[in-house]
Length: 282
View 1 (cartoon, rainbow, N blue to C red):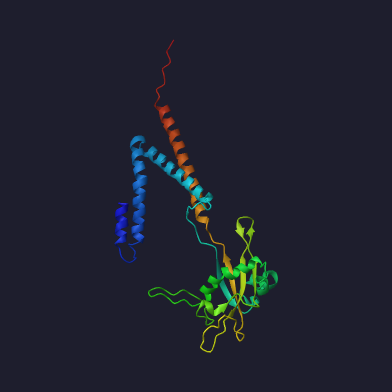
View 2: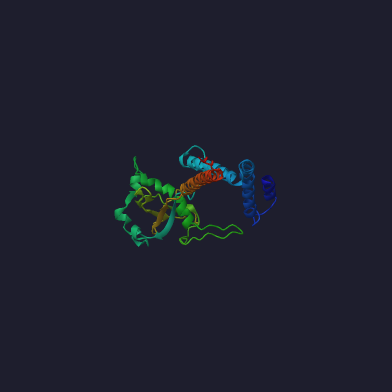
């Protein structure tokens, strides 16, 4: 049945409510009914409906506990467990100076944050903050470079794409004389993170008489520089795995308790069925 549903999904044509939404739900239901249902059917015919269900359910939960524990401890073993959002930078503001930011913490980043300059990044031992210039470039591109919408799809909301930039090559984040900052980060009481922000200075690229970018690219001295204020999203890669692991343990404990209670009931029924031996009269 599962194979038939998959073949039917392949013939469905364009994506719609039936394919892949309904067909995906039916595939999962058919798979669970086939594999879990067949095991319960075999156990139920030998142990009874109630005990067969408890044994089958306990075995399934034990398997899930082992699987989710393997997800937690697999590391880089090649197993691809469920995961949430990946860590990423996101532009939250475009300002002339960090002091103009709407985020209170960022307003003092020029004095309290970790500063890195073009001279420091060009040295033999550049500070680790210089790697941000490469890491945040895609996030800045997504924020200030207008995206051409694909036919039939809604264009993304880009409130900061107002600088007249049409390509990722129209601005520079690594130019002579830039000064950028980073602040925050690190763990807070082991389970939380301190907010992490970055203020990256960028300039618009100078153009020739034909309107093309100069080669090699250089900042336009007639245009002011701007700061892209970015917030770091630490992501939630392991949260789904932890949730699955906790739920599996709880259900496994309940299944084992169900077996224990069934055994207690069975012993009580056997004791109740025993006929007391009559005491001989003297």
